[in-house]
Image (cartoon, rainbow, N blue to C red; front, side, top):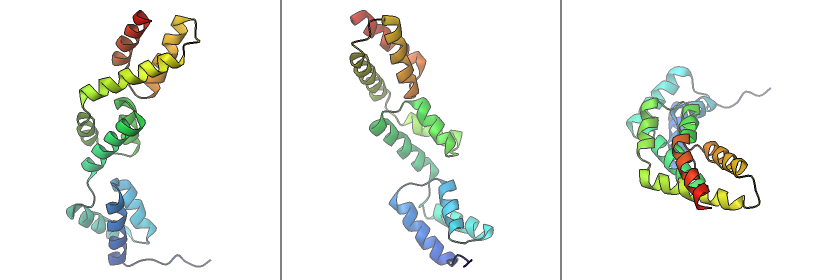
Amino acid sequence: MIPKRSLTKEQAIQKAKHYCAFQERTHIETKEKLYSFGLHKNEVEESMAQLIEENYLNEERFAIQFAGGKFRMKHWGKMKIKYALKEKRISDYNIRKALEEIDEDEYRQQLQKLAVKKWKSMKTEKNSYLKLQKARDYLIRKGYESGLVMPVLRKLTTES
């Protein structure tokens, strides 16, 4: 088997800078990338420090961008965003900061829109309890808090 060609530390840092400049990355993703370039532990740690120092890597910035993107593009709720960030091993502090960046009014409007859309899509469902349950489950799977979901759905049941 032919050994994988390793990059020098300087070459690896240059590639990592491009990697991080292309889109926000977590520390874990970047570390794995540096290891994939054939660097050893101490070189990876030094490279990580340099990338952080030169602001190519910033986990708070990553978390804020990730949360905002998932909320705006995929209409995820805060719970789903929180667990996705935890999976990426983002600190609780940065998760909190990211979730605080989501505008509360926009958040509630998005929940309302999703609830109405789901409610209308189930117009053939005659059993109102089952309809309510399906809508609730859908919104909770999207990551919205049940404490916010239920009042919105109760209002929809009284309007229909």
